Structure formats: C-alpha cells, structure tokens
Image (tube, rainbow, N blue to C red; front, side, top):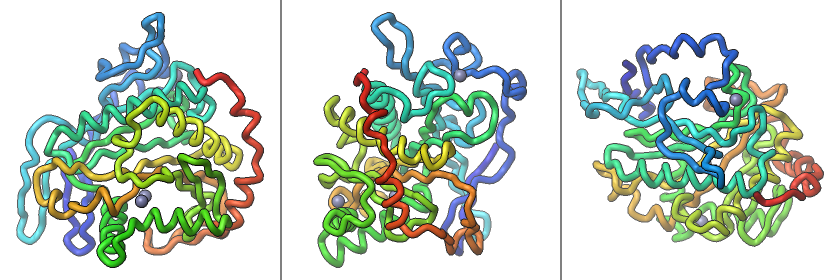
Length: 339
Ligand SMILES: [Zn+2]
Ligand SMILES: [Zn+2]
Ligand SMILES: [Zn+2]
C-alpha cells in the first residue's frame, strides 16, 4: 500500500510503495472497459449523466488500481526528522463519451459542457471532505497503453496535500498580491491582451495564450477573462459551461493539429474547508489566484529538460507557437450542433 513521504529539503511529497495490481482480465488491453456494455468490468458509477433514453453519456467511477485510497485515516507519522502519511485520497475516472476513439475536442460543445459539469460536481463533492486539501482534474490523451487509453476519459484526484506545482503557483500569486494587491493572472491577461503577441484566441469570456516562459512547445493556458479563483464556483450555470466548452474545443482542436498526444490539467483553488493551516495560509486566495487550464501537446522535438526538472529547454518561443496555433483553421470544424 503506497504511502506519502515528505522530502524535507525540497518540501515535496512523494508516493512510494507498490500500487495495487490491475485486475487480470484487463491486462491484455484488448477489451475496453469504458465502452457501453462493458460497465461490469469497472466499479459501479459514482454518478452519471443520462440521455433522454436513460443511457449514460458521461460516467464516473473509482479507479480500479488507485494510488490514493479513501479508506482509513491519514496516520501522520514522524520517522526521526522525516514525515510520512497514508496516501489517503480518492482517484476517480470520468468517461467522457460512449464513443470509443473520440477525443474531447471532437465532441459537440453541449457534450463537452456535460463533462465539465460532472467534473465540477465531483470537485464540489470531494471538497466536502476536510481530509482533502486539493482536488486535481487532468487528462492524458493519446498515450500508448491499453485500449481504455483510446477511450476519452479524465482523472479526478483528491489528495491530502496540494500538488507541488499548484502550491508554487498559489504561493507566488499570494506574494504578488501582498506586494501589489492585484491578481498576477489578471495582470498577465491584461498585458497579453494588449500586446496580442502570445494570444491564440480570445472572446468576452475566455482567453487562450502561450505563456511567456512556456516550458513545452505549443503549451497553452486557457483562463476566464473575469477574475475567479475557483473553476467549480465559476462554472455555475449551463451558459457558462457551454461557453467554456465552445472555447476549449477550439483550443484543443488547434493543439490536436500539432499532436494527437496531449496532457490537460486544471488548476483551481485548494480546499478551503480542509483541516489544518490552509484557511489561514490561503485566506486571500479568492482575490490572488485565478483558475485556468494548462494544455501541453507532446511532440518529437529537442525538449529534454535538465536536472530532472529545474530547467526546461523549449526550442519554440511562445510568440512563434501562438502565431502557428492562431493560423490553424478550426472554425469550420466547430460549426456543428451544440448537443
Ligand atoms: Zn471504449
Ligand atoms: Zn485574476
Ligand atoms: Zn497553473
């Protein structure tokens, strides 16, 4: 059973220990457990969206071999100078569509909106548990693994610690706010909107940019134009969900023209109702942090990063990447029914 160990020098939590084995029947990778009719190969649904005929369109269930488990306590322990705790958490799979092989971007906007809606609801539900300090939502698309990897799905991961990269963003956003009483992301949006050099797309609700210091070629961020620290609070109406779905669809279609392999991560505020010092530490988070998606296509390029992750080498500057992504024609493909 994996546990979390803290690297005391770098303040980084590492999951260590053997993870539970995958059920044998799925190891061959031939059967897709996410396809309709194969629900028996997955755990029961935690929640589903159903169509008018009562068939599921989007469903969520617990991962079959989770790194994080809901049962038991945290059991925080010291081991000399070291800290460890149980890898307590929840790892859920969101199957985004019944159609095997369709990417999220290929779905109609109304269907993409249903996926975001169910992710929103899972975040809200998991944040009711004060043991969880953060809920992550991410997807790895097009990576070569068993058949299920070709079936569009996302992961929802609730953890007793805030992921290192998000915590870094939270800390530096807070510092910027303490110095200037402004949200650093709003400042970035303002500057990028004025210069236009790194903008891929924008409308009244959302903006898509290649970040100034992009770590990966064609990395993009999608942010709401109006300040909001929380995806789950911002996405509180069908209209807002649909607006995001339409915008993100175009962004993803562009990225898919660059590479069919991509990673998409949501960064939203931490669980303010969690036990521990979070409430104090993040008391201005609603003003200083700004939720966003980060999307990284995977391409064959000379992008080796040095010293494991301290330095990144990206041969394509953000301005060039934005220019290329802007030039990709996607409007026509988006011209389809909303539902
Ligand atoms: Zn499938
Ligand atoms: Zn902001
Ligand atoms: Zn981020």
